[in-house]
Length: 187
Image 1 (cartoon, one colour):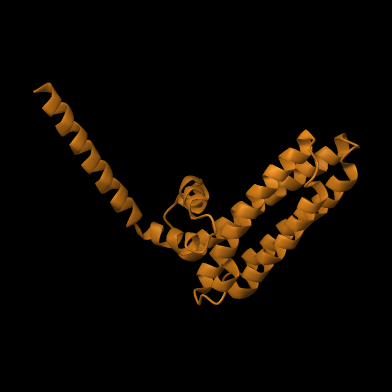
Image 2: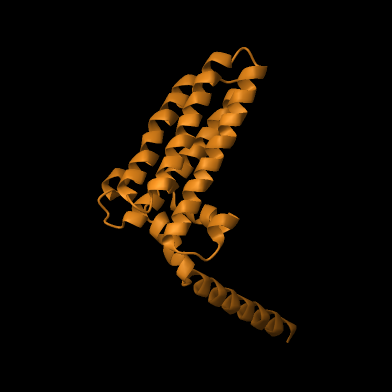
């Protein structure tokens, strides 16, 4: 009898959880998250990021969600630029490379801010601004890719995160555009 009680409790819990999950995924907000994440290379990262960060997890429309995604990427670029600048000042062995990386991250932040301003009026231009940041990420990887010191390793990890966020930002701009002409760039 105790076994049947445990099994029925487990079954009831499983059914309740399934109902909660299916209603959450059917929410209007998930429709907007899906519109962006369907365009991302790493869809699991996209869904996790957009459902766990407060600015992107609140129920809002596609344009405000897309703006929040680009702001999230901008924030990461700015924080990385600060890290790179402070490290360049403290560690003379990486100063030259990190000074160039700092410039690259400042350019990424500027591109993302420009994209957010243009997002509503010209999502294609916003998408281009986001994609232009990829050149700066390649530059950073060239500058520190072979370094094994702790600061360079940290910067490489931050750059991987930045690349993922740029992918989400490009997906966000493309989702606002909704004509799928940029989908070929995602393959």
